[in-house]
Image (cartoon, rainbow, N blue to C red; front, side, top):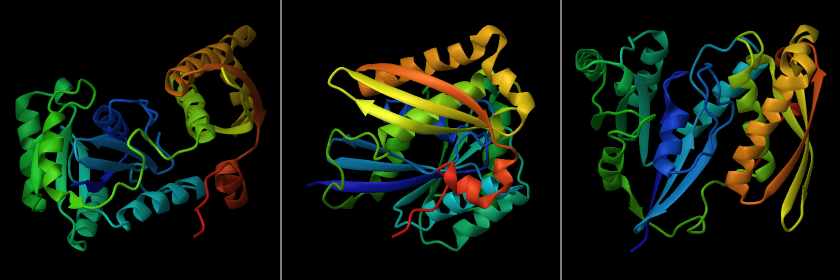
Length: 297
């Protein structure tokens, strides 16, 4: 008897949602960095285990948008909560306090007829008292179906997630082939892997103003050739991304290529170019042209 389970992973920015999904899947498909608002699109991760096909939706971190890109991200996150969900996985960090963002999230939950599992993440860098206080604070505000303290980074405690969410799986045919891990295109995955390395390797003022466009993606039997353009918002950011004698750009390319080869299973040739597009995040057309636009039915 086959079953499916659709779960949205939601929460405010920088709580470890993408790390949790990658850990649950056992493969990295969502990019991860210590910069807030790393995830910009809803990413669908697929895991078939036993008789259940899990469909996890990794969503942008909930925050108050300051530009057109931020508004797009919030629409993406909210659209995931509007899907036909079987369970919601709400991720907070140990030590988090309830503020306006958390209040609005839990208010939204109260308007939905979907069980919510609270994940208290980052137990590896917080003591038991901090974890306990976080659990108590959030549990007093909302009646969660279950509460799981864990470390998405180390994997400790993540096996309990499956034990808790399996009960919400429904009898249904699997919508995806058994070996699928995501329905994102390889072009989209490549773009995100490049952007992740920019987040990791550049200074604080650069990452949020960066977008990556895949200009060509040519597949052969044993090689994928990719030409990508990196757009930054300010002329002063371009030399930071390139680095002295091109060293930073070379590292971005090497690290991204290694991740792509691991995921795609073939050799990758990667050609990167850096361009300036002033204040593109504030322009709705520019944001859409960078790939951040709603899909039409």
